[in-house]
Structures are given as C-alpha cells and as structure tokens.
Image 1 (cartoon, rainbow, N blue to C red):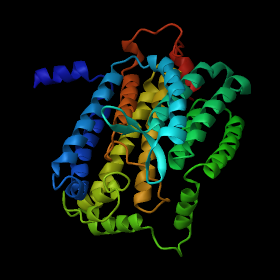
Image 2: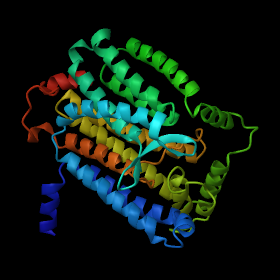
Image 3: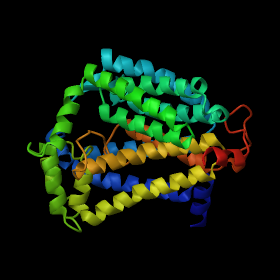
Image 4: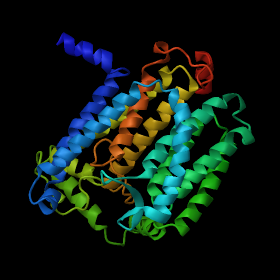
Amino acid sequence: MEPVKNWLRNNLKGDPVLWAIVLMFSFISIAVVYSATGTLAYKKMGGNTEYFLIKHTGLIVVGLFFAWLAHRIDYRHYSRLSLYALLASVPLLIFTYFVGGTTVNDASRWLTIPVINQTFQPSDLAKLALISHLASMLSRRQQYIENFKTTLLPVMLWVGVICGIIVMSNASTALLLFFTCLLLMFIGRVPLKQMLIMVLIGTVVGGIGLATGQRGKTVVSRIQNFTDKSKPVPFQLEHSYIAISTGGLVGKGPGQSTERNIMPHPYSDFIYAIIIEEYGMLGGIAVLFLYLAFLYRGLLTVMRSYGAFGGLLSAGLCFSLVLQAMVNMGVAVGLGPITGLPLPMLSMGGTSLIFTGLSIGIILSVSRGEREIRPMVGEPDDEPRIAKQTALA
C-alpha cells in the first residue's frame, strides 16, 4: 500500500478530499448511466447494453485525465489563456447559431468535430473562458474596483456579449452563467450600484435575445406550465414524479428503474429522478450532500488561496458547477420549470465531461497553494496575502 500512497501523493496534488469527491461522482455516474441507458441501448444498439457503458466510462476517464492535466498547471497561466479562449468562443458561438450548428430538439447548440464525429457545445468553452477571464479582470482591478470605465465597462461588454449570444439558443445556460458572474462580481467587491446596472443591462439584453432567438416561445411555455397549476404536468416531469414517489426511502435497487423505459432523456436531464427511483431518498440526499461537500471544499480553497485571482477563479467555477446541479435537481423534484440542463459530473455527456474535468482541475490547481510555486512576475497574484484577504472580505 505504501507505493500506492506515494504515487497518489506525488501525482494527485491539491485537496485530497476534493479528489475523493470527484472520484465518487465518477463511480456513481458510471453505475447510474449504465442503468439509465438500458432502454436506449436496446432500441439503438440492438440490445448491446454495454455500448453506452463503455462509451461513457471512456469519457469519464478522459474527463479525469483533463482534470489531472489542468491541476498540474500553475493556475496563473489560465489568466492569459482565458482571454484567448474567450476570443475563440465568440466566433464559434456565432457560427453555431447562424451557420453550421447541429440542431437537436429545435435548438442549434452543437458543432460536430470532423473525423471523430463528436459533437460539442461552444457554450461549454465560453462558460469556462468567461468565468476565468472575469476572475482575472476583477483581480487586476482591485485598486480601481469602483471605477465604472476601468471595471464595469469591460466586464459588462464580455458578460453581455457571451450571455447575449448563448441566450438565443440556450436560455437556462445563459441565465445560470449570468448569475454566476454576478456572484463573482459580488465576491470581487464590485459596488452594488454597478451590479444593479449590470442586472438592468442583462435584463434588456436577455429579453432581446429571447425575443429574437430560437427558444423564446419554449421558455415562455415552460414558465407558464410551471406557474399555471391548471395546466397538465409536462410528460417528462410527470414521470419524474412517478420515479421519485415509487423510489421510496431506499429505492428499488440498482438497475431496477421502470421510468427509464418511458421518460425522455433519463440519462441526462432527469438522471436525478432515476437515482432516487433506484437508490431512494437516501441516495438522493447522499448525492445532494456530495455537491454541498464539493462546494464546501471549493470555498476552503478560496479562503486558502494566496492571491485574489486564485480565490475568484475557484469560487466562480465551484458556483457554476454546484448551481447547475441544484437547478437540475430542483427541476426533477418540481421546484422549477424544465430547463434541459444536465447534472454535472453525473449525467451522460460528450465533450461536456471534458470541460467539467477542466473546471475541476483548475479548482484543484488553486488548491495546491501558492507556497508550492514561486510568484510569476506580471500576473494578477503578485500581491501580499493580506491584500487578498482584504479584497475577498
């Protein structure tokens, strides 16, 4: 056992508890997705139920590899890389929406990568890039944080452009990203007056994007279905309720779900309902606890980070993942309108698992601590610890 411990100590840096949580999510995801894709495999793969198991396990391994790779890099490099990623994501988002996007469920959100024939959402890249660049901008402007021209204007432009493009095809992702940016601005000591201006501008831009985009009618319809109790419960939500109610306290057991045969997308949007059906309320609470534990360890990383950039970066990525998880689980139990957001780290996905792995790896990179790495001149973290603590107070 000692060689294994030494290998883990030398290769898995950062918060070991955070690593353990991520690995637990990976094992749970493989088990639940295998069960939830049984019907899909039977219909599309001629009964080859192992097809999606092998594919999803492979993507989980790739995602973990990218997490490991990202956590080995000094996180201050992401301050530079985020701008290039952001500049690349804008034309990709525009091209996907207006020209060459692959359309699924009346939404054009995906690009197909040639040769490997794998689809990915440019919004995944845009989310990661925007949060990282916003953390970089706020950390560099701590001394001028109340200046509208030097602080709010560049932030407003980037947040407005990215969220404005995304909202035309994916309103829930855009709203969640916008809310994450507001949280990051609050932690970064942006004055409430400027944040209020940001909210007003975001409301106008979001309204225009919804009115001119693909999903405006769908968004209105889903909100009406949620608020108007006289309307029938949507089909997928009705069967989510059935899955939860029949799961009971301890569930039906692994692989015993019946609603996976009826419910649309039981392996992505409504995988939480399948978890409760098979593992009961105890299983659902355990998953919720893991997300809260992930958030707690991520916030500990924020408090222990040496510079403002590391703290803001870790906070933004943690909030992004956990807020999406809370929204997904809330939809499954009827606490909000249907959104179409997957459950991060658990739902079956493609390249989204890679971007999730990158986000986790960056958080782990911050958790390694500045004391392991000599400060890099010219980066946003060349400030004393006391200045960082004041900035995040």
